[in-house]
Image (cartoon, rainbow, N blue to C red; front, side, top):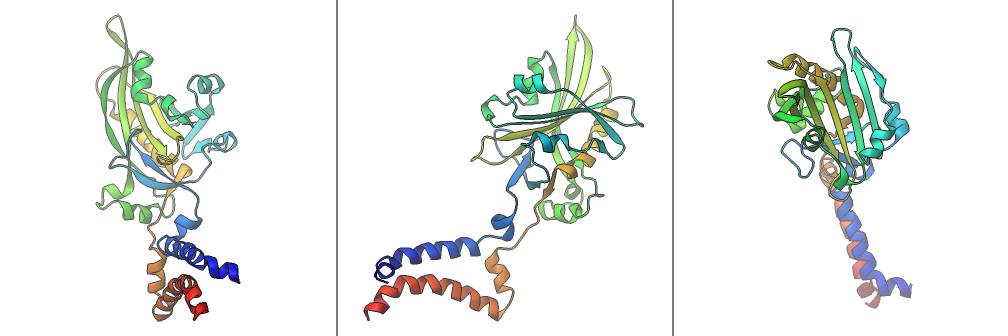
Length: 280
């Protein structure tokens, strides 16, 4: 009892801190899987950043290999990535070619994760190092497949307009390779990043690319890539629903909720004041 009396102020402050943290958090912050963010930028957060929860462990080879080989009408075939992963300093890497009976060419799908942010090679750096020239750079909106139950409602929390609340921003590159002054290859690339915040060096990139006509419009290829990502995204992550802080949820219960909040604050205050009560 003397120990409790001597350290009551410190114990009370610790309990008060725990009460404040609990009341000014929500269930997702306390109990859910760790949150991450999808974004079009690697080095900084942009206006396109969104908070998500991953549906699969992108840091596990076993989980990555279980990523659906069939997505809608698309069917994939794996590449051996052992040498590529080592060359890119990647911890986990999944590379597949997906084909669709309605299209005449494959899409090249890549998920790559590294715990070394400084060695990560974004496409805007990687393609020029491979001899490509960036012809065009921009952003695209990828509509999310509404076949995934619940996405439409969750999107409306983060996006305000009718057009935006069903789409995700991705980075776009159009790159070409030349030989003797003539274009020999042209690709359309869409990609984005999953970032776990400044406290983690782990970074994940999701990329899809395809060959495009050597000149003229590439819209058909672009739409094909967006269609694929639209169906692939729901297999990888889900959006966090907006939740009230626990203190507001308790207050919404009415009188009993208010009383519980008061009691939670009174307990550490009484502990802090215990030495004075005992002395009296």
